Length: 127
Figure 1 (cartoon, one colour):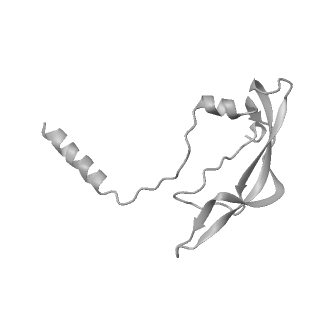
Figure 2 (cartoon, helix red, strand yellow):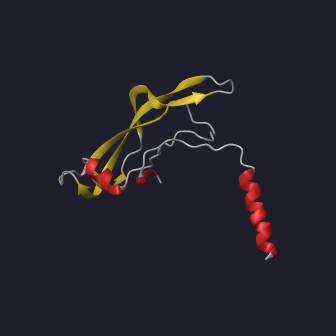
């Protein structure tokens, strides 16, 4: 019984000591909604390394805040990755490969507590 009182006290102290909570606003969608809104749904593997395009832009919904509180837009570079389809769940049955156009940070990312949640694609041939 004494053990549970100590554990309860520890949990209360830890939750009461939290000074800041960081989060980001995201929309939650279930798989059925994603399927209905998609033109192509596949199981695929990357067959090439990600290659930069000439496109340079900004992430529309990201700002970087420096130590003085100044906000700057985050530069983005367009990249493309070619995928080979293993199975087609929705879309044209004749599709064997497709190219995914996505973005990466132009500047090499540094260690950030709440940075962008971007994907990195590695080709199976490069492993």
